[in-house]
Amino acid sequence: MKVAVHVMLLLILLAVPALSLGQSNVELSTIRELDLRVKPLDVASSTDGLMLYVLTPGEIQVYSLVEGKVTSRIPVDKDFDRLTASPRENTVILTSSTKSSLKVLQLDFIQNIDVSGHPFKGPQEAPVTVAVFSDYQ
Image (cartoon, rainbow, N blue to C red; front, side, top):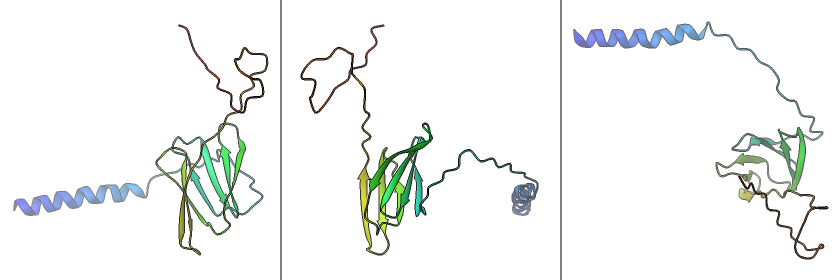
């Protein structure tokens, strides 16, 4: 008797969500649309959701959602046809079904900082500039 009651309760619990699925409504709105000018092969998002990596034949286009534009283009072998963002920040995985190969890329984004007119030490034409941002409070 107890088993029959438990089975009946289980069936009721399973039936209620199935009935409510037919009544749900979904609203769609476009947040952003990109004109890539090249056929995309695959797309992945960065772990923080601020960048889109768009694989096209021969390159990865890095699209900044904050700036609303393509900020970098990374040349890759044209045989790569699949792109996956790694859980590790700024790492993407490329795969090629034709060559049966895989490549893991670490993306290090370089920020150009204009230091003209600011105090500095060392030669002005140095190949590397270290900028220090601090708060004395």
